[in-house]
Every structure is written in C-alpha cells, then in structure tokens.
Amino acid sequence: MSARKNSFAVIPSIEHLLRRDDMQVLAIQHGHNTVRDCLRDATKRLRFEIGNNANHHDKHSKSSNDRDETWATKWLVNTVTALVNQQTKSTLASVFNLTGTVLHTNLGRAVLPEAAINAMIDAARHPTTVEYDLATGQRGDRDDHVADLLCRLTGAEAATVVNNNAAAVMLCLNSLALNREIPVSRGELIEIGGAFRMPDIMERSGCRLVEVGTTNRTHLSDYAEAITEATAALMIVHPSNYDIRGFTSKPDRRDIASLAHEHQLPLIDDLGSGTLIDLEPLGLPHEVTVREAIAAGADIVSFSGDKLLGGPQSGIIVGRTDLIEKIKRNPMKRAMRVDKLILAALEAVLRLYQQPTSLAKQLPVMRLLSRPLADIDQCAWRMSQAMTESVSQHGQFTVVDCHSQIGSGALPGDALPSRAVQVAPTVSGGTGLLQWATALRQLPRPVICRIQNDRLLLDMRCLEDEASFVGQLRVLSVALNGGLSPC
Ligand SMILES: *Cc1c(COP(=O)(O)O)cnc(C)c1O
Image 1 (cartoon, rainbow, N blue to C red):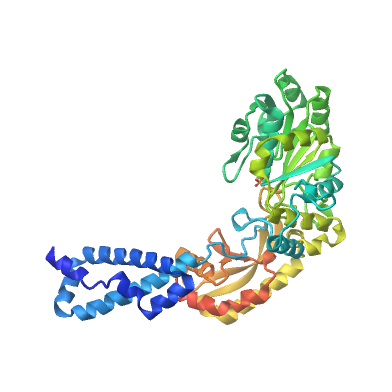
Image 2: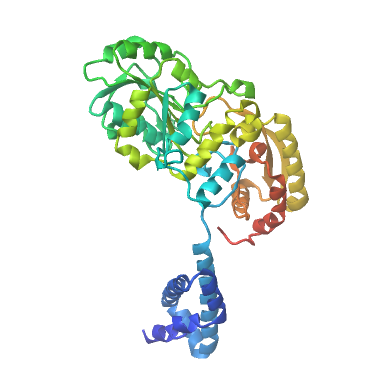
C-alpha cells in the first residue's frame, strides 16, 4: 500500500500543470475549462496505470523519483494535448466517397450544387424571410418558397415540405388515416435501412395496416376486397431497395387510383427516391417520375429531397389542395418542419430543374450518375499512375471494371458500369487490405473505399477533385508506415 502511495507522489498537481507554458497555450486555443477537464481525465488515467503497475513504478521511485516525476509530467502533457485535440476536432469530416455508391446514406447522400451552397450561406449569414411576406409585411408560410416550384415541376396542385421522407410518410398517414385502415400490398411492406419498416411506421402513425395480396403477386381485386367502411386510403410504396423478379404481378397505378376514386378514397404514393425528370436521356434506367405518379391519379405523392432529386435532406409531399391543407394543419407538421438552410438549398436545387438541359452539369448527383465511362476510365488510369509513383512500395495498382450503385434504394437492380483502381497490398491477405483501408481513412481528407470479394477497390466515379486526392498521397505512405495517429 505504501509503495503505491509513494508512486502517486510522482504525479504533479493539476494547478501546477496548468501554469506550464504549453498548457497555457492550449488553454488560449481551446478554452481553460476544456484543458482543465482533460487534465483531470489524464491524471485519473495515470493514477489508474500506476495503481495497476505499483510494483514496476515502485522500483523506479526508490532509485529516481525525480526522473519519474519528469516522466509523469511528460506523459500527462502528451495525453492532455491528444485529448484536447480529439475533443475539439470535428467528427463531421468531409471525405472522398470512392465506395461506388453515389447516394451513400452514411456519407450524407447528395452532394449539393454550388447554387444551393451559396443560398445556404446567405440564409445562415443574414436574417431571412423564412416566414415573412415582404409584400404585406405580414407573417408568411415557409412552404411558399418552394410550393409553386414543386407544383410546376410535378403538375400537382399543392405542396409542403418536412424533414425527410420518413417524416412525410408519417405525417400523411397520421393526417389522412388516423384510427382507420390502409390496404398495402404484401410485396411493398418494405424495410429501409435505419429501422424504417412500413408496418411499424403505419402503427406509429396511428393507422391500421391491412395486408393484401402476396409477396410476389398482388391483384386489383385484392385491394377491392380489402376496402371497408374503415378504409381511409389506398397506398402504394416504392419497393426501393429490393427487386421482385420471376412470377410477379401488380396492378398498374392508374387502376389502383381508379379503384380508390370509385370509393371516394385518396391514393397515397410513397415514391421513395422520387425523381423529377425522366432519367433515360441520362443513360439511366427509367424510374417513375413524380409527374407520372400524379398524372396516374395519385392524390398524395411523397419523396425524398436528398436522393435522386439531389438536394438537401427533406421530405416533399405534393398532391391535392384539400389533402395538403389537412396535412399542413396537423400539429405534427410543426415538429417536422424544415429550417431556413434546408429551404434555401431546396429552392436553389429546384430552380436548377427549371433548366433541365444543364442539369447533368450543374447538379452533382446527376453529373456523377451520368458520368461517361471513358471519363471515369481516364481518371482511374491517372490515379493508378499517381499511386504507383507515390506508394509503390506498399502495393500494386491496376484499373479494373466494377459497378457503381445509385444508392439510397434507388433502382436497386441496376448497377452502373464504372472503373476502379484495385489495390493489391504488398502485405498479402486480409491484414494488408485492412491496413490499407485504415490508412486511407487516416488521411487529412479521409478516403472511403470498398472491400469486395477480398479486393480493395477505389471506384473513381465520384472522384472529381483529383488534385486534392493526389496531394494527399505523400501522407498516405506515412499512414501506411503506421506514422499517422489513428482518427
Ligand atoms: C428512402 C425512403 C423512405 C425514407 O426517406 P428518407 O428521406 O430517408 O427519410 C421512405 N419510403 C421509401 C419508399 C424510401 O425509398
């Protein structure tokens, strides 16, 4: 016991440490309280270490207490500096998305166009008329900034916006079907990542799901037979992230709409990704557009703002005026409303859709999805060469065929031909691959790759800023040698 107590004596006091020049500098940079808290943490850790190694330190303390005190101080200063840096560094890092998934939910989905970024900066910097009508000097409606645009782009009568499409679906169901029934095809009872399960969402929205049809086949008669006094609406859900093939059938959305209308019921269509334009001219597979869903007779259509639309995270609801009014009157709308930054970005993105011809250039999501293969190929060759020049001692680099995905549940069955730089690490086997993936994530602007079938691939579809990527390769060799601190 006394040996341990003796060992603790080498730990300098927090007050003493705080008076050191290097700690003072740290305090000026990051705040006195942060440094003091980290000093407390570090001291606690050191006491714990010493307590565990009482014998070891006891030996030292008998012979050279001074040396141990220097050692303890050094350890504390280093640890506190690391802790402070860790605590004050943003964990929201911008990265290179070389996963091949263009709309990667974990990497924030759509990258915004410059016009939207500038609009967000303006809205952030100045007071903004988010709910203010300049003409009358009266209170305005925040939906007004995008509602007209959305109506023109979709052919709908009215529109409103909430935080994401999950919120949009909940709000529609709660507003239009509270304590009543909605028949949905068993082929559309989907789960989307992040615990969005249609049956659970319906229950939490306060309405009763009536399952109709089977997983692979649902007929119009299945819907017809499910309609009762308690039915509030019919609903179609886009099977976003999976694909049913083979012996399948489902009714045309026009026929489901007609059936709903024969019974004076609205048709709710959760389009998921919801594109505003026909994707085929961009060389992409056809996806039902919002305009087509409205034209087919849907009374309410909901879709995401940050999937194929290419805007900020938001959920857009368009449709019949009376239903949109009802949705807007729901008190839950207030809890789901978007802020001025999102509105600013969304408006700017929607304005780009007014000039569809330049969309493939102006809107990053469309630009990346329609990027010519020859372009990606050339980029891949340049990058494999740059990597060979910088880090050849750590691996070999070849350009290989691969497939990118749209992501976020859009067009799940269709992969886009792309090119990747494949890394064959000098250290062979799984360790080599993991070492590489880790080193790539430790770069100043982390590079996120994918490991598939024991191959490490850097899909070049989404690499546009080649100079920054190449600029980091010098540091990559340091990281591969284990020289960069883990993030
Ligand atoms: C993605 C998706 C949602 C959820 O949208 P978020 O904007 O991610 O909240 C809901 N329904 C469908 C069909 C989807 O594809």
